Image (cartoon, rainbow, N blue to C red; front, top):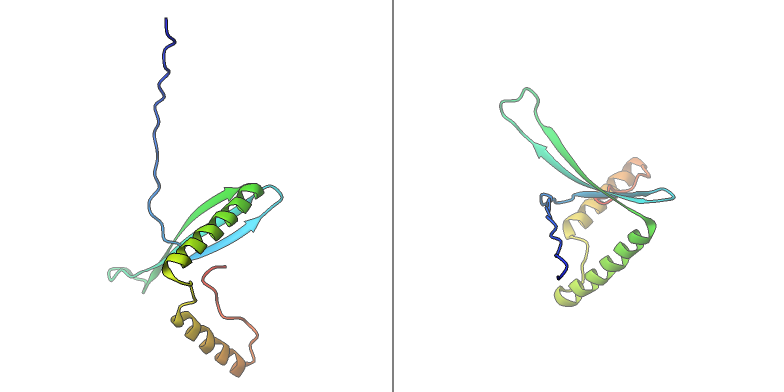
Length: 119
């Protein structure tokens, strides 16, 4: 008599699409923590406050070996992207913002660097 096949119920909980405006990466001896942030300004004309900010986080924790594998995979995918679509460069609007910020900082003798979108 043939052995019965065991059936397994599989339920996939797909997360919602998430656009990250910022990313911070931290680590400890056993893991890397990728904290993807989506920052969205909200304006509600009925509210007593002028504006609010919605901040969402998606945190991914991986062990050091897998963090290295993520780095390798991202390098590979970016190379393929650039081969197909051309070199990825910093947007002109960000370059202009950084120049303006540096100029203002020099005038004020401030040594703070221009803000970065990605940590």
